[in-house]
Length: 102
Image (cartoon, rainbow, N blue to C red; front, side, top):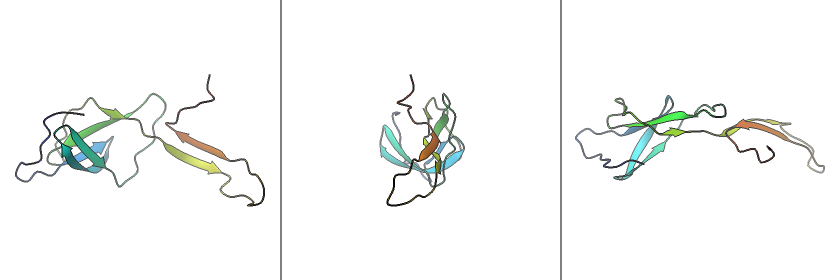
C-alpha cells in the first residue's frame, strides 16, 4: 500500500519487481498498484523475503520497505501411483505454514 500513485505522466510505463524478477504494473487507484509476473520468483528460506518495488519508467526503482514471502512446491514424490489403491505422497516446498510444528 502506498499513496498518491499516478501514471498520467508523459511516457509513463509502470513497472514492478519482486526480488530481481520484473513484472508489469497496473495502477488500480491512487493507493494500489497490481504487479503481474510472468516468470517464476525464487523460493526463499524461512524468515527471508523478497523486496517489492515499483517504477514509473520500469527501470528507476523507488526505495521500498515492502517485501513478499513467496511460497510454492519444490517436489512431489512419487510423481504417480496406482489408481485403485492408496498412495502416500510427500510434498516439499517453502513458505507454507507447518500445522504439525509445535
